[in-house]
Image (cartoon, rainbow, N blue to C red; front, side):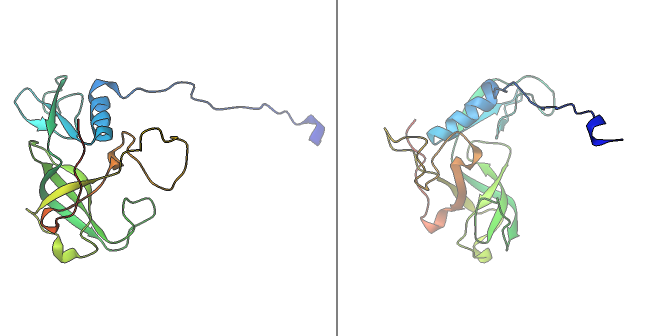
Length: 173
């Protein structure tokens, strides 16, 4: 077939909609931006963190938002000796299931022990290390190289062992 006989039909694939996070997940992300953590209370009284919209056992809709602590206990963990691109820390760290104070379910997050796997243990206490808050009046589009809180799970940069004395307070709310 000669080139002039080739039919061309341009196609642009678009997704002209946006998705809202909803009242439960939206409350979780808003709390993270403000420097604290929330979960949701199930009908049986369990507090689930991160919150879900429906009870994983009964499928009942969940709406009662509950504040929990930004520290907790490691229930399980694995060591990452050589982090991959896109992981939350550049040096060796642990992925851990952490049950925050006031929660009944663990959440997955990174734990920074300064690269020392001997400082990691099941049952140890850890505390959130928060991203800084963007200074008042600073242009949100300015790139100063600092990652500020924005309502994202990585507003908690990682967790750190409590006995290290490291970590910063989450902030007022």
